[in-house]
Image (cartoon, rainbow, N blue to C red):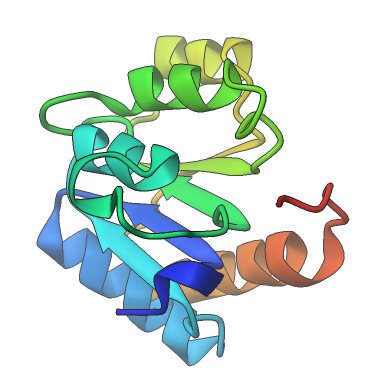
Length: 148
């Protein structure tokens, strides 16, 4: 889904229901033009840094990354740490979109440089509203440095 050269949103979510709900919410808000969905932290890092199956893609970096905390292989906090500690990727806005409301996850995410932390609401309409505001802000309103 989406052209790798013009990715606006990288969705990192292992739960198929949550991923589908997020993509539906983005579509409903007309924000799903260029979205790439990966299911674990390792694949997310491979995509972002152009490794393994993504090594042949000359890609621009995503405009925003929606990242779950609890992921297989490499968890969301480790992915966040790698993104924020790399000169090339540290300015990409990362939004933790997770069901975890644990205080230590929230604190650790901010220590590592997350831009926003959103606990997934269970109600679909609430979720669509949250995603709409998120997309409008990060894709349309926020001014970020231009990535080459």
